[in-house]
Length: 214
Image (cartoon, rainbow, N blue to C red; front, side):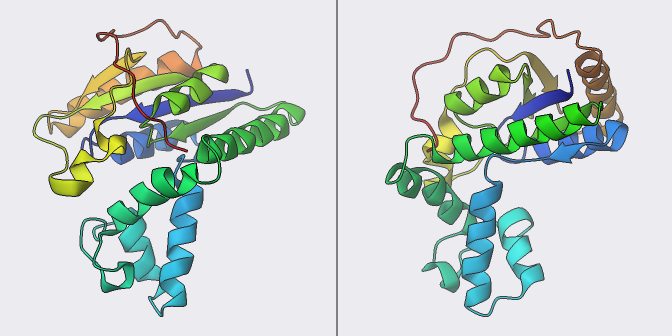
């Protein structure tokens, strides 16, 4: 297959971005989170208020995601992205962001197929069942990253995007803060995925129904 898709799920701070970076360092490819379009929207909103581009990136993708901002009415950037992704998105379509991601992934697949290539596509923010469905529809794997003691508190932590049980994962990587062991597990996952040996590495209990990201 020209497109090898890996979706990463796990609590905030579990190491999804670290795992994604390792996968792409090993095989190249592209990182395309489901939330990429809404992050771009939020950055434009911030920059329109005079926030520097570098600072806006820190607010959507860096160390300022959990810091309340006057530019967002006192909410954190994470809260703004959560409500853009669900509450606002549902006003337009029940599958707004997932449909956008799917179209983007399918366009990438057409391009690499025409070139006779194979490319790795990583989505490191899988939070809802319809996102799992979109990844598996492309023949992809969904891998959960478990790290003890992680997660968000307060309003941000109680949002559906942080509490949804996605059901059985195709693989589980335990991140116990030993970077060498983490990379060994990621390397094994990468070899399995790129070789198309996609037998489940671990199976969890069935999930309860959960709201979807729009």
